[in-house]
Every structure is written in structure tokens, then in C-alpha cells.
Length: 176
Image (cartoon, rainbow, N blue to C red; front, side, top):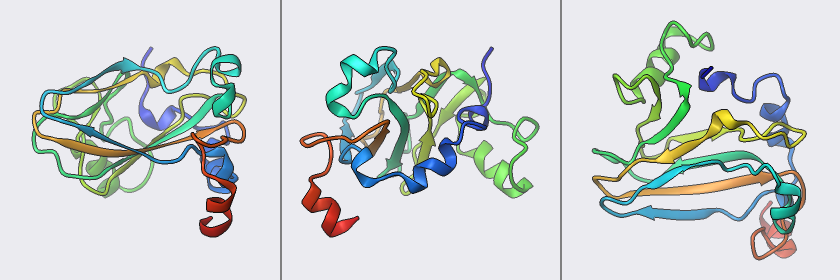
């Protein structure tokens, strides 16, 4: 059965591991523009056969970070069709103010988690656990953008991501 986003990735160590991950385990950031009426169909960021299909990109995708680069007044939400919307009653983390803020960043009335893009917000989720086990609950989609939408996406993989997908050694040495 669907669960809330707070349950995805908890108890598996990913939350702490991402902060101490080597820079070489991340793909270079990708900036994506959704023009009016563009959408991205439901999909997974992890792959059941990642050891083969994603071997040249560092293996399985362990975490996804989406950063919203502009406010989108209409459309362009990020919807998780297998996760329930966060409500004050099913989100036990943080204070009431934090819970209400999470609730208000969703499409009201949608039973599933459906995030409204706001400039500067970041959405972090874990499409696989630390052992690379695929998590089907993280299927998500970019809903049609009524207004233009810009995001930056960064994936963290199981192992080193070589260029052109990852950052060069020079870039890592200079900036990381």
C-alpha cells in the first residue's frame, strides 16, 4: 500500500550517507526546462537492472535531488502516484509549523503526494536503498506545465560517475 514520503528512505542510512558521499558519486547537475504543456510521464529514477544498464553512470541511482528554479503558478507539479499526500496527522516529523508548511506545498485534494514547485525549494528522495534495491514507491511524474517550469536535477549513484555524466577530476579538485 502507498505510504508517505517521510517513510521512503528512512531507516536505511541514506539520509546521513548522502552528506558524506564522495563528489565523484554524483552526476553533474542537469537543468531541465518544461515549456507550456510539457510533461514527463510516470517513471522511476532507479533501475531494476542498474548494474548492467547504468554501469557507465556509477550504477544504481540511490538519491534524487530536484531543485525548483522558478515559481510555477499553474501546473508543473511533481506527483508521486504511489505515495499518500502528507497530512498533519500522518507526518510526525518536526513541529506543527513544519507539518503545515509541508501540507501547503502540495496540491490540495489530491490523495497522492503532489508537490507544487516553488523557487528555491528542494525535493530529496531515495529511489533505491543503500544496497541498490529498487523502491517502486518512488515512481513519479512531471505533470503538465501550464506555466513554464525550470528544475535542476542531481542524482547520487552507488559508485563513481565518470565524465561525461559525472564531474571531471579537475572540477572535483577545484570546487568540491
